Image 1 (tube, one colour):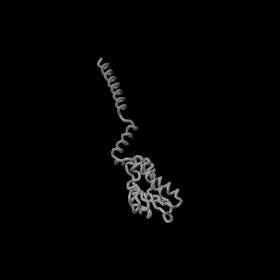
Image 2 (image 1 turned 120 degrees about the horizontal axis):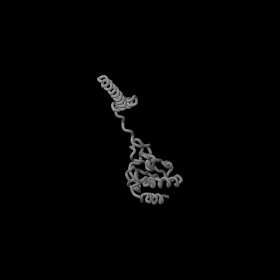
Image 3 (image 1 turned 90 degrees about the vertical axis):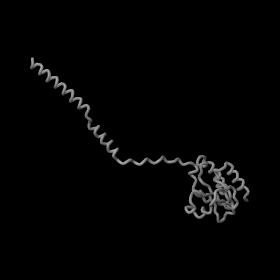
Length: 172
């Protein structure tokens, strides 16, 4: 009987060892797990990547304005118009407030049959970075032959386009 108990004990030990080895196999990491762990460790040890660039700003109509425009021929024009403007919160939020007065000047110069010339300049651009003709524009507003029509940013008030139209209409 002692032998029988001994054989049963050995059989139970073998079955216990089989279950234990199966549990160890299941608990041990696979090759895929080891690769993932190695990649994660490499990422932790790698220098941090610089933050991605901010998303590109969608250009508004105000951003589409050229920094300077020369319209007409100043050598043959009877009247010279100087327009100085800057970007501000108002025309960034509502680009048409800048586009409308500038377009009024463009239209009058185009219709003038050579009697008018204009320099339309973004004063945010330093004078040394502008063309010689655009360097003549030094102040905000609209100036016709030394007569100031508007002394502020052309986009500052909705009535500026009408003011410009009225003054340009009086020119012969």
